Length: 114
Picture 1 (cartoon, rainbow, N blue to C red):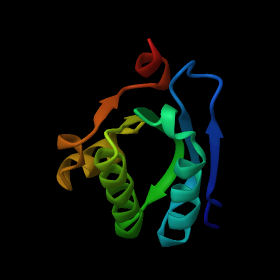
Picture 2: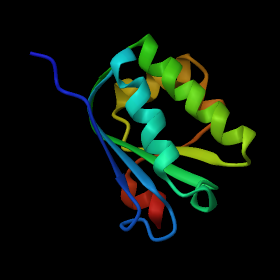
Picture 3: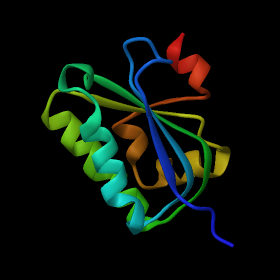
Picture 4: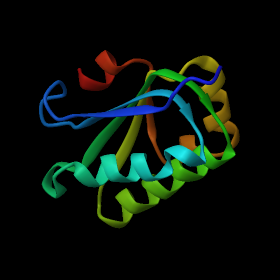
């Protein structure tokens, strides 16, 4: 059975750094929710946004396309997206598709916030 996608916007835990916690599978069905979650972050707080993948179980090409759109939107508005908590497989996928050239990747959420 597929893991249901969930996203939670956390404006408290990271201090001044908003965190998008993604759980489950990132597919085309997650596109609107990811963009809406990002848009719910106050504009003044979007200079650096962390995406926590530690509970993400799957990502397909449509999910990667969503992440690319998000990274593009952030950079057009002088913001940065950073990834945390990628497992070794997802990290390799991000490297293969070239996302590691555009985002800072942290081993863990704790390291990203330190």
